Length: 206
Image (cartoon, rainbow, N blue to C red; front, side):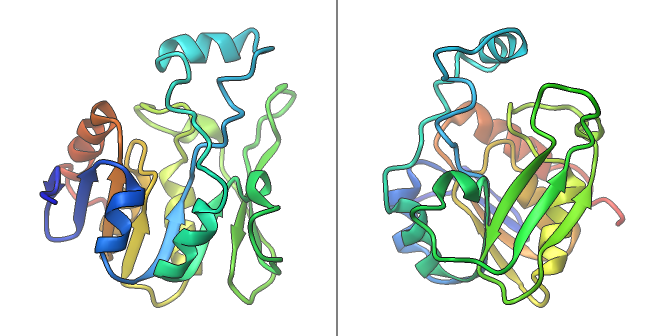
């Protein structure tokens, strides 16, 4: 399959990860943030949830992966970090090491933190980073670049990274800035274009 975008560090495919991942071989790290099916498509959404749904296309992107898909992706990688792992807890093995992103929301009605399941043999780790630190937000569940670079750094000596739910490309951007190689997959072309534009930006000093 021809990449949507490719440079020395990042390869981006536009398509269904269920079809693409089996053709790619193995990676050192799976680092991804799959749709939970519970963010913008909730029937009782109100206030900011409804505003976000309208801004990002009504929540059509928020389709939960079929059962077993997330666990199947683990077979393609030595290490794995799955944001929103609490939404898939019944499908994933027990884990010693969870990552916690303290969103520093203050008195906001939104969640105080987000959880990342990992298969690393390490202690729980937490990092504080305000949602307001996200520059040029282009996706409703976009993570701060600081959080994704933190994840890659915690994984240690990993050189190849897979993100089959790329969204706006933060995983690829973090990998590129850290001098690692990443393969991204995103099924919506509008987000592929956002990803590609982010990859074209100059590598940022960390």
